[in-house]
Length: 182
Image (cartoon, rainbow, N blue to C red; front, side, top):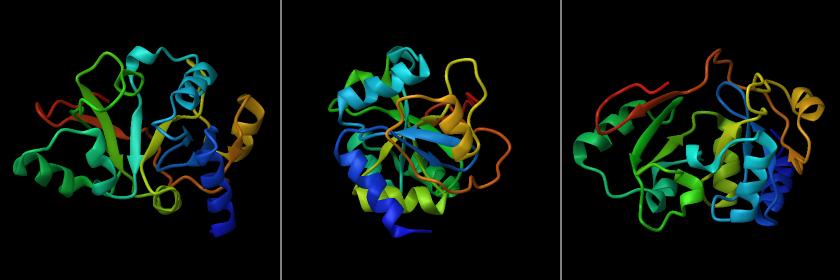
């Protein structure tokens, strides 16, 4: 894994750009979650309504705390049992988080990734990033950097690498109810 590639991707994130990168199952589109223009660019690329909200991925739990309200010890135990890993949890969103990230929901989707390269990316960036599948609405998600290049426009940088091999998207669970959303 080239640290030069990671540094190049981080430079793009810091410039408010959109990148593509491998995750547990598919390539993701990402940006600095606090950069509204970059988030809207992702939504435009995907033809995704902002109301649906987005997933935030991190290298560790500490990078997610700014996005969520404090959690109980019981919920924290659930998170620790599945992270790092391919489970995305819906947690109560912090009042500091802009609506363009959580959509019309009072929760936000967050995950501590088990994908080594993505964790290195978040560590080098110094925080969590947006993580949504690299595809246009209704199309299959990209599983390779070539697929991203061929099917998506306006991506500012592709961090090439391999997805972890999961055949299905990450599970999404509501931490308060235990309901499996996906």
